[in-house]
Image 1: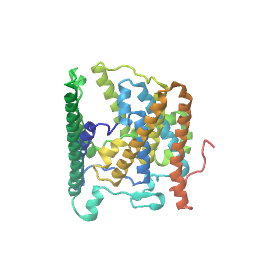
Image 2: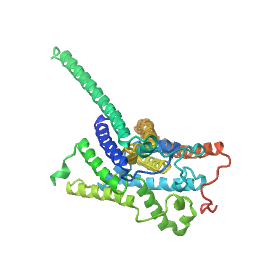
Image 3: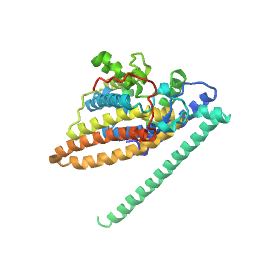
Image 4: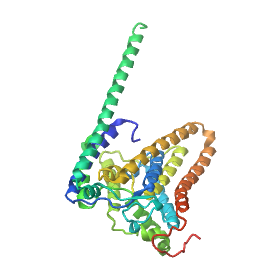
Length: 176
Length: 215
């Protein structure tokens, strides 16, 4: 799982710091292909459902592909049902048309359809006239703060671990 | 092949992925997973249903099945890469989930992942390696969603594992399975109902024929 140990979380934070810096740097100069679609309540709800599924299946979509390649039949089964889930969703969508299709996205908040519109580093740069990299560096600083907090927490845990093992040793020596 | 036998330090592995992802961002767009799978679903469904698929507005308006879609090949590349890596390190062998409960969890998990990806337009990779580094508003929404979801998921699986230790409860497992599926359907529908309540005269974005093959 994502947060059961901090080893992968730390790696993820490092990668996100690099990516934030790289992406916002290129966005500043108008380079790169940003993902362009409106977000809204569906983004939160969808990833919530995805998060539950990810833990139950024991893998996200990437790791199901990788595990499938390594010969894991359970992962192949998960993939098949991911496809089934997508197809079921397409049936529901064809009735209620929510979330809005990319062709009907406006980029503006549309609260009636529970949509918040489109906003990223590029739109921030446009709106405030401040280069996107400035916002990017702010995000890098926040990510680094989380990284530091994890390191601190790990140090406390390690210290606690040492104390406990020392006290165990101390109490077990006289008995021997 | 020694290289494939060693486990790479996750920090180094993800740093390499991050740098490659920046190149990908400049060429086609940040690494995402989900779109390719949807396209595959569409293509598979097209094989089985033929032209009937066109009567489902989703496959016209959101995803038109297209075999040339680049994201399909990213996913197939991961499959192929993992296969080659496993073969070269002699780690390729077929593994099967042993317990019934594992099959059940994988089935529900897969279904929920598929529904979640399509509801949000993103999966966890595009959240962490695409939306959030682009500082897209959706990235922050998605991270909060995935953290909450993973937490709930681990609660559910804990409960499942406790039940699982008692084999006589296999029936109960199947019952919870169907309950969970209906619960997830409900949550998908609940948003649609909520939205309908808010806007009684909401119209579909584009007029489409009201002909559905399953009716």
